[in-house]
Each structure stands twice: as C-alpha cells, then as structure tokens.
Amino acid sequence: MDNKHCPECGKTLFGRVDKKFCCDVCRHAHNNRQRTLNGVYFNSVNSILRKNRKILADFKPTEPVKTIKQRLYEKGFNFSYMTSTSVNKKGVTTYYCYDYGYIISDKEIVYIMRKEDL
Image (tube, rainbow, N blue to C red; front, side):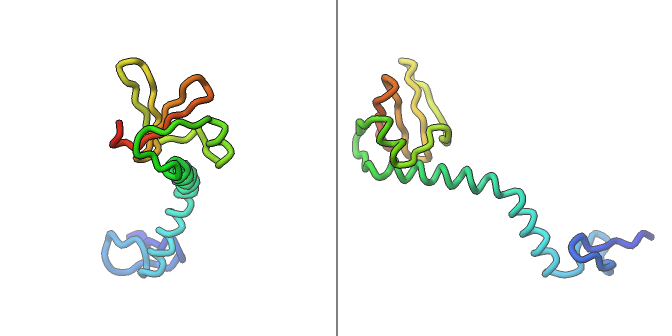
C-alpha cells in the first residue's frame, strides 16, 4: 500500500482511504491559498465592475439620465468592463453593469438608467 502524504505539510496520512489532509489546519491553509491564487483576477475584475456600478448609481437615474462620455471617464469609469449587453429591435446596444444600464450614442452622449426603467 502506498503511503499518502498531506499536500500541505507532507506528513504521512493515516485513517480513511480517501483522506487528503492530515488536519483541518492544513486543509484550510491549502484551500485558502488555492482560492487566493485563483481569485486574484476575478477580484480585480469584480472591483472594476463595482466601481463602474457605483459611478452609474451616483447619477441616481429615476428615469434615463443624459451625460457625456468624458464625465464618466473623469470619474474613473472603465468602458471595457460590463456584466451583460442587450440589443433592442432598433439595433441599439445597452450595456449593463449589474442593475444599471447605459447606451452610448453619437460617441459622446451616454444615457444612464436602472434596469427596471428599461
């Protein structure tokens, strides 16, 4: 029988055949490190999305609000990140950042709205 070893500390494992770690401390340490390594990219993207949503929410759109694209850039909005898009029957694309949407028209004018307004 092959001796299995804990992937965290290297101790020989005893007990159940399917046991992977020697103790809860090693299991938690291993899983936390894996989440950190895998989550760095996701955390940075989610941070950008949260910032974009906050910027859109600051306009407090109870109905579609008109602004210029430059104003959003100045506040730190990143147009490369969104959660989804939709195209209406007229071919107009609405970009969403969670529950806020925006439509870019004429390259400089942006209409901001809440999803329920759509």
